[in-house]
Image (cartoon, rainbow, N blue to C red; front, side):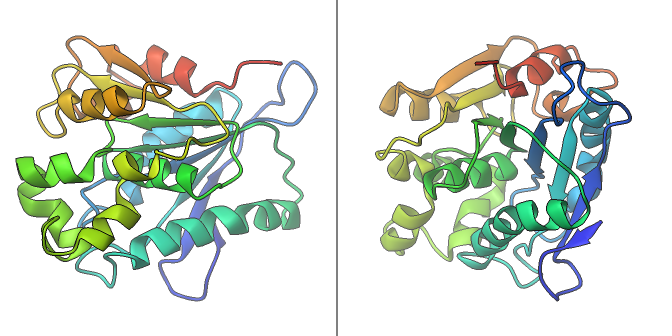
Amino acid sequence: MVRYASRPDAVVDLFLPSTRPATGGPPPLLVFLHGGFWREQYDRVHARPLAEAFAECGYVVALPEYRRVGGGGGWPTTAHDVLAAVRALPGLLDGLGVEVGATTLSGHSAGGHLALWLATEGVAADRVVPLAPVGDLRAAAAAGLGAGAVADLLGGQPDEVPDRYDAADPATRLDTRPACPVVIVHGADDAVVPVANSRGLVARHPFVGLVELPGVEHFGLIDPLSSAAWPTVRDAVRVPPG
């Protein structure tokens, strides 16, 4: 674990691969942002099995914590925390003598939203792969996803705080295309963040890829031990050579 700020929760869990890549170069880096509708009761612990599975596949995995609604978070604090964590990582890894290669930025659900938002902030990444993201905040607010989670994050509905939605919503911010590929993986049977949210985002921004997985629900995407989705998630995260 490393620390990106002085607060108790400003930490990043690191998972290191047991072997180096067959190519002999540095291992790839996966930065993974956990979900939980940006709420304090959900922390990074539930994403550790996924992080461990990717480390077994040869990745250096960084799993940041960030302030969430009910624990000092909300907009823009939550976003500022993940941005600070990602920007601090190169120096933190260098200080530990950990070399990394290509970087994939990913996250699940609310963490997928944060990964998309970071992509629009120009964070250095070779690939962005959100899993079941809340990618269209206005649509999610209209649907009442997470019992009003979007309004809780942003402090109101779109007609009440439109500037906050403009600043936070990937559906708006992706009007400026990121420099790296963006590929969403979403279960077709997701009842927590329905795949319609991602379909709407991709319809507006066709450069965003979408892999739909039939028969897969919300949490199957982060279950490397028992979900049939794991091989697709693993392959989607990999940065193609060249």
